[in-house]
Length: 313
Ligand SMILES: Cc1cc2nc3c(=O)[nH]c(=O)nc-3n(C[C@H](O)[C@H](O)[C@H](O)COP(=O)(O)OP(=O)(O)OC[C@H]3O[C@@H](n4cnc5c(N)ncnc54)[C@H](O)[C@@H]3O)c2cc1C
Image (cartoon, rainbow, N blue to C red; front, side, top):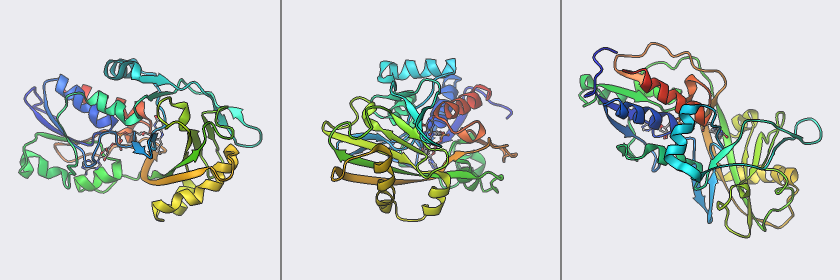
């Protein structure tokens, strides 16, 4: 893109990791940036919810910090409010539970979406402001921006740009939170989470392992359902998900009868990509950066936005 300079105006669509990372770097490079976010809060799929006195991460459960640039940004923005998850993750696939080894898992003490708010700092973010058509933000379309960067999931971005989406299937994921009366029920003190490669319960985690998140006297479990299960039930009302998933969670964690208190369900229609997107040519002035061009992880989404902006000038 020719003619980029310090006085360029850039609209960023989406206040998730990619959008905030890009916006911060563009501002650092002297551009004037406005972020438009359709939801009430920042975070996107790095989502947290206040619910029944608890703070639940119903999107990204934890994040890695492997890249030095990401480490510096996270420590600078959140400091020691980002903590390590010490308890193990176990696999329930094919026989007795075994340990899943992965890089250190991190979480934000106040909810993982708070990481995104911290990273945003004093950026100009317009919440509850959905963009309907990206071109109308450009000067050529009657708007006030020289460039528009979308970080909305790729199928949504393609619609915003008025182009055919490239052949990229985003995998959906149903999320269910379940609260129980009583602390550290069943097997919850022994493991943070279970992974299951071949069953419907792809991931279940006990949120009590994130100190300060769960109201005293309760145990809260969070389940992410497998791709086949999520696709099969995607269009059912989200209120029905807890009843559908409860028996599986209670069996997996050996929870006692009669302790269940409440649950909620959430539908992630565009949860993750299997393969990185090969970005097609985009109309002049329109750009895309998001987890789809790397991998569906918090750290990769941040890097996608950061690297886009770093290469912009
Ligand atoms: C269920 C689930 C579990 C996950 N677990 C993990 C995990 O444990 N660890 C990990 O590292 N990663 C995990 N991920 C992946 C991680 O959350 C994502 O890769 C990352 O958050 C994507 O960031 P992003 O900025 O690319 O996109 P998003 O977070 O999707 O941000 C895009 C933003 O654009 C906004 N938007 C969309 N359309 C418009 C519009 N028209 N106008 C204005 N705003 C708009 C959206 O509201 C959203 O805030 C998980 C994801 C899901 C869904």
